[in-house]
Each structure stands twice: as structure tokens, then as C-alpha cells.
Image 1 (tube, rainbow, N blue to C red):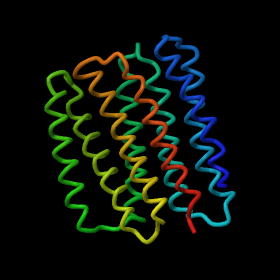
Image 2: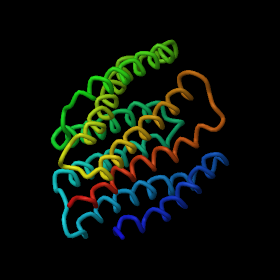
Image 3: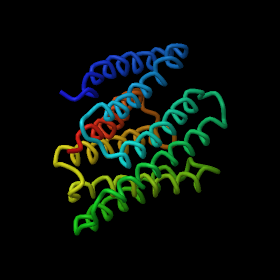
Image 4: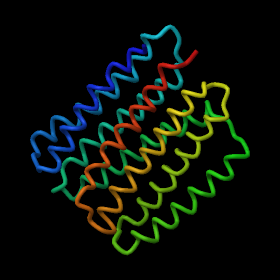
Length: 221
């Protein structure tokens, strides 16, 4: 059993209590549990170095993405600050760029890229049209974010055709990227379209996605 897998139940418990703290608006608990949950995912990525084989490019790239994600998580905790959201958006943007670079290096372009890109393009344009009226001065940054995260997901899906990844790894990476994408869609819809009482549940998607991307680092043959 891969060492990183032992962290899965630990993360599940942490995320459960994080979601609970968010619903109950216990900010002090959130300030502790949220960054701790991201640190668990970082440790899961580092655990790949305990395996007989690893891919340095993948692990380092994912660690860079996770470190910027940690910064984004911390920034977004401070909801009362107007500057927190743009800062968090920027940090997550860099995280997606880091993931994209890794997936470009290790993925493989194929005919399926046309289909995935078309679907992501339609989804991105449609979602932007939905939230545009409430974006205000954030229109530019949000467009940039949608473009970058869409490219990240497209390149993550390209791992399914890459000989650098096993089928299990590619499924982890692609599923993780899609879950990350969906968690961001829920958060953005809640903030810029229609408030949803249960939007904190998106944290389960976010941490599942990040953990799958980190876990894949332990499965290089």
C-alpha cells in the first residue's frame, strides 16, 4: 500500500470538520483546519519520495501548485477583507499554471484534445455569461482564471493518452483536475450568481481533487 494512501482517512476527517466549521461559522476552527488540510495534501505529495520510483518533474510541479494553493486557501479565509479574494484568485491562478506546465511536459496531445477543449470552451463561455453581471472590476481577472483553469483541465485529461502515466495515474490526475474545476464553479456561482446555502460542500470536491493529483505522484513505475 502506498504511503500517501494512509493520509486519505486523515484528510477525510479534517475536511469533514472543516465543512462543519464553515456551516457553523466557527472562524477560529476554519483558520486552523483549512491550512492543515492543505498541508496534509502537501505531505501526500512528498510521500512519493518514499516510493521506490518517482518522477521529479511531476512531484516538484505539484508541490509548487500545492504551495500556492495553500496561500490561496489562507487568503480566502479572510472573507471580510476586500483584498483577500483577488489575492486568493491570483495565488490559485499560479497554482493552476504550475499544474498546467507539468501536464504539458508529461501529457500527450491527441485527437481527444479537440473534444475536451471544445467542451471546456463552451462551459467557460456559458459560465462567464452567467456571472458577468455581478463581476464588476473583477471581469478581467475572472476571464483569465477561467482560461487558465480550463487549459489546466484540458492538459490533465491529456495524461490519459500519455505513456508517462499508468491508466490508474492518468485517471487520478484527470479526475482530480475535474473535481478541482467543479469546486471552483460552485464557489464562483455562489459568489457571483446565486448564493447557495450548501456551497461549503464544494470543499469536499476541492480536497478530493487536490489529493488525487498529489496521490498520483506515488504511482510512477
